[in-house]
Amino acid sequence: MGESLIMTAFGLATAVPAVLGYNLLVRRNKGAMDQVRDFADDLQSILIGGVRHGDAVAVRADHSPTTATVSNRVG
Image (cartoon, rainbow, N blue to C red):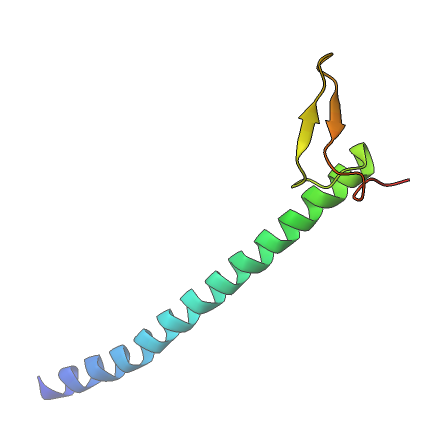
């Protein structure tokens, strides 16, 4: 009985840091993937429309979009 309690304590001493480390790595990976997705969105927006993804877009009276800022335009 005592031996099984000792082995359980060793198992918990090994499992708890492993789970904490795993959660840390998953959180860091999620942050990195968010940055990659943001970059991909910006790159696609610039290549297709000449405007970054997060920039504001104004709409003219004829309902055609125009950029709110000229400094972020490409070309």
